[in-house]
Every structure is written in structure tokens, then in C-alpha cells.
Image (cartoon, helix red, strand yellow):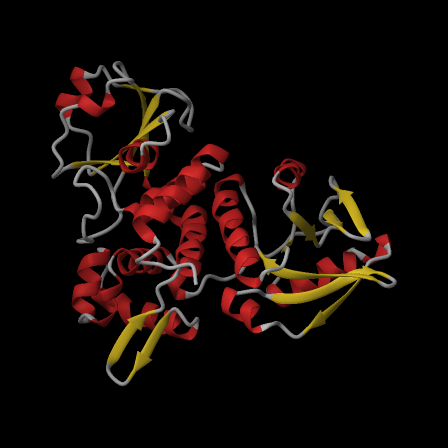
Length: 347
């Protein structure tokens, strides 16, 4: 299902509740914010305007980035957002309800809470199977690496394509298609021979969402149990080989979050660290509290920002959102405010 079909079917599924929806022209603020449709909904004379946003295949890993995007759109459009999607499982519906995020899916699951509207339905099953949307070149694995390099260094957009490929760690031949797709989506502005990244928080959140869906799982190499968990700040790391990411990086950057999981980005874990900290492979495929996750870097020569012992704040932000944890999401906002707002403004 493409976006239009998701909107049409989600609206149709609301009719048994007596709710009618009319798509009206988007205000200029909504167009700038990336709203997919402006819906006027209600029963009879009671009508409410919603900034509708289509989000496909919502999962726990993408919930944080999706929520951040919806919050940004609500603020920019000055209107409550309505998440429209193909299908929400009961646990995902409960999470959205707990966050007071209104939603409707094509199966008839919905949460609406506005003057004249109060609907909360979950547990309805989707008839048939939704087809996953095809990824544009900018949202392929290669495209996500290129976008990451550009988010870390927006001025790179006007550099020779060879430099962009080196920063992203991808083949030179892949760059033209990715750049063309970004231009078509409005993320890359081209005038004559000059290129400029349309650098803003909307692009950051879109990348974080796609990263959580397509790329992040591929970076995880192993999960370890470790001794001296509390003393992680004193670990002897060779910063040419190993960098802190996610929760420990956020602690170093904004001193707000006490890590429950330690994330290291490295081509390989140094043998000395394995021995000194008595690191042992953990059972299970997901990190639990007081474990260390080893993730492999996916970039090339992106600039080191903020601190020499952490990955770039763009990645710290995205990794925190991908946990889906409320405290991590609060911390992600702090990282954005302190290190990314000037580079990627919300406006």
C-alpha cells in the first residue's frame, strides 16, 4: 500500500464508528512540516482538524523516531497529529495510547480523543497481508550511509562525489542515484552546479526512522556480559579503534542518562579489553541491562564531533530513539538541543 491507499483505507475503517473524514487543503505550515494529509474529522457538527502522517510498519525499534517526528510535526503545524498506518499490534496500540498519540489503521484499530470524539479500539486483525513499500535510493542501505555522512557534515553536499563516497564508506558509482533521489524528495537543493543539503530536523528524524528500520540491526555483532560495568568511563580504549555510542555516549555528552546497556562501535573488540573486563558472550539475541553491545561502524570518513570518544551526535540521537525507552527519548532531545539544533534546525 502506498501512502494514499493507507489514508483512504484508514479513513474508511473509521466509518462504522460514525466518523466522517474530509481531506482539505494543507496550511502552508503543514506543507513545510511534511504532513501527508490534512483531515477534518468528526460526527455531525463536531469537527476536528488533524495533521495526518502516514507511518508504515511501526515496530518497537521505530517507535521512538516516529514519535519524535510526530511531535515535531505537531509543533510545526500547530495541530494535533493523527498517525495513519497499515496495521498496529495490540502492544503497539497500547504504547501509542500511553503516549496520547492518536492513531488509526486500515484494520479499524483507532484512538481518537478530541472534542466530540472519543474512540479507542485495538485487537482487530488485518485481513490479508500488507505489502511493504519499496525503498527509494535514499532509503536503501547505501542511501542511508550517504544521508548519515551528509547529516554529520551538511557542507559535504557540495563536495565532489568522490569525497561524499569516501565519507559515507560506499562505492562511488552509487552516489548519483542516491543524490538524485534526495533531490526529488526535496532533501537536496540543486542550483546550477551547486548542491545544498536541506538540513533540518525533519530530515534527521526521517533518517533516524529509516535507520532503525533498515540499517541498525545489521550493525549489531555481539552482546557480552562484562565485569566492572560501573567503571566503564575508565576503560582503556584506543580511540582510533573504539568509540562509545548510544547510552554511554549520551551520558558523556549531556550527563543525563545513566547507561543500562553499554554500546561500543568498533571494527573488532580489542583482545585486551575482552581479557581485562572478562567479557563473555551473553545468551539471547537482545541486550539486557548491564550488558555491552558491540556494533560495527557503517560509515567512512565522517567528522568526529563533540567528543573524540563518542560517535557523532547524529548517531547517538538515532540510537537512543531506537530503544523506544521514554528516558532515552528525553535524552535524545537533549542531545539534539545541545549538539544538533544549529546544524539541523527544527524550522
